[in-house]
Amino acid sequence: MPDDRNNTLEGGRLSFFLQQQLVGTAKKAFLQLATLLKNATLYPPAHPFFLGSAEQLLVTLEELLSKRNEASFHIIAGELFFETLSVPVEESLSLLLEDISRKGVGGITFRPGLKRDELVAFASLMRRDPGALEAQGGAAALVSQAGIVHLLIHKVLPVGAAQDDRKDKSQKKASETYLDGIETVRDIVTSAHTGRGINTGRMQTLVHTMVDSVLENRDALVGLTSIKLHDEYTFAHSVNVAILSIAMGTFLSLEKSQIATLGIAGMLHDIGKVKIPLEIINKPDSLTDAEWDIMKRHPLEGAMILSGLGGVSKLAMVTAFEHHQHYDYRGYPERGGGAGQHPFSKIVALADAYDALTAVRVYYSIRKPPDEAVRILLKKRGSVFDPVLVKAFVNMVGIFPIGTLLRLDTGEIGLVVHQTRDLMRPRVLLLKQFDGTEKEEVSLLEMEQGRYRRTPLAAVDPNAMRVNVNQYLV
Image 1: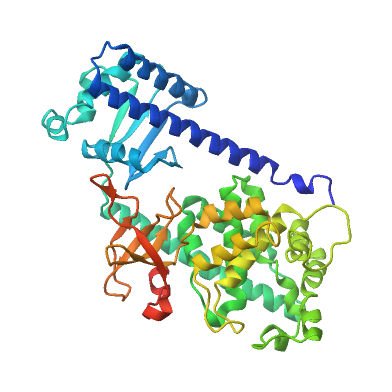
Image 2: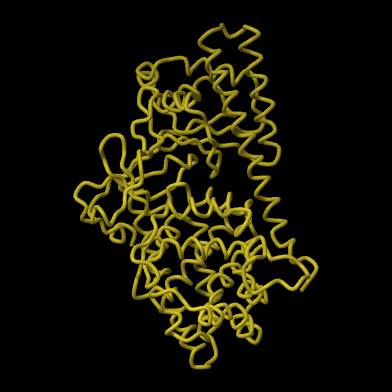
């Protein structure tokens, strides 16, 4: 193996940590903006406290602007974003988001050349109540009239038909990609069973499409992994592991080529099972010791199949061999020394376990709810799974992953359809008819008079409520 096998994620980790550092700086700027706006209501424009808070904000904004042409903050459904990154804010600061939104401000862009006097003038304008601002043409017009040229106000984004149309198109594209994945994996498995050559070109094209889809809208494609197709489990599992692995790659900010390689490794991780008798693969009862010994051969069989497959990175072979070895190396095949488990193997192991836990197949009478699967992964960090990657995986899928049914304190039932910056407060689709026709989505971050409008109480078993979750995710 090459010497850099454990450094494959180094660039991704650096990007990930730099991204978190950027979020931290953006949050600092927002906190300083909150202080400036508060001071504007307490002190006259020439007061040292007021001017000092403007100076502090200016320094942080200059840091954000040092490597970009502009620094943009946006408020969307109670969430704060810096560019495309979600910025966590405390509940007390959510009042500021609510107040800014009421004043017709959906975002603020700061540009190089910004002066302290412009910040002071902007904060002074924002002291006015929403009615007064609207009567005078709105915050954006007043900022322009005041000669503030390095600060741009964005209007509150409406949740309208155009957004719904874009979401529908994104979901349709993701669904088409998912179904194409099922057919592609079916072809791969059939080819491996019969000894025919695997169509690596089709697989490469599919995985690159998956990468593009996840980069465009991660939740749209990842949400489809919540669909459980009992009759298609063998094929759907490989597609799900590929999607979840790709999503992890994007979450860790890997290079696009690395993400594609990781996706192929995820898709082919279980290819060795074509060499295991179907009566063992599909046995509903516990395996005997002899049968389990046969089952444990599939990582080696997979590595052997992939070792002779052209057009596929050798990392797919490595991942197929290592994905059951465990973080503490108490899994199988037994480790014979040498370099440690490859990071891609650790990622695929997480994706494999999560999808297996939530699956409907012959091994389980019912699947585990997504939130319970997350808790199992957390419990096994440091033993079966890499603790750092478990933390990243949970941050990606959320405490309540897409497809989780929640009971809210309002008495409503919500289906998780999108993650937010708060792992405990996702966006949910409110279910009323339970027939797949519902359209109303709300963020559990939304506040009213300083309090959350809705709070999740507990996850609900969709089987107990006879809710077909699949109809909402396709």
